[in-house]
Length: 161
View 1 (tube, helix red, strand yellow):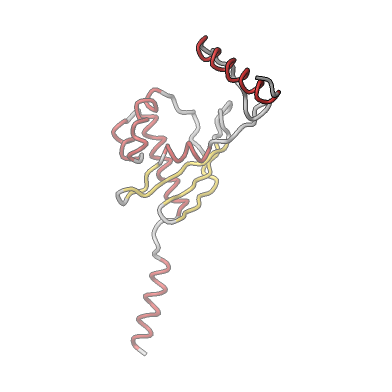
View 2: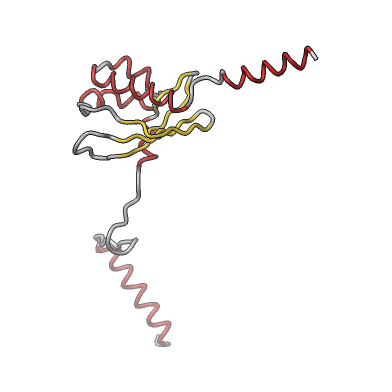
């Protein structure tokens, strides 16, 4: 009986103390990201971004973030990845809604700008056929080879020698 009571309490308290939710993690990381951008704090940005995203820090520091921070709409966690759907409330925003990807790297949740770019890319159908033939210059030598091949195949198909 004593073991059953202990097991019961472990299960209840273990379920309650599961750590921060995906929404809390995403909100915290996005807030830190925005604060670092506003403060132009490159060193702090390096700690917020994944290793593959750190190469974009100089470009990020040259940009001015919008007056209003992005609004977290939802966050979904799958293992060591969080997809955070955000809305940009700034007037004239290039993209009004998008996804930020957070990845667990070295035990920390970090924003992955490379995966974020991939998650937000969309294919756009262009007018016209899916393949296009682009004429290229042909050298005089290749033109002469093509003419000889054509004449030879014409002679064979017509039966003339």
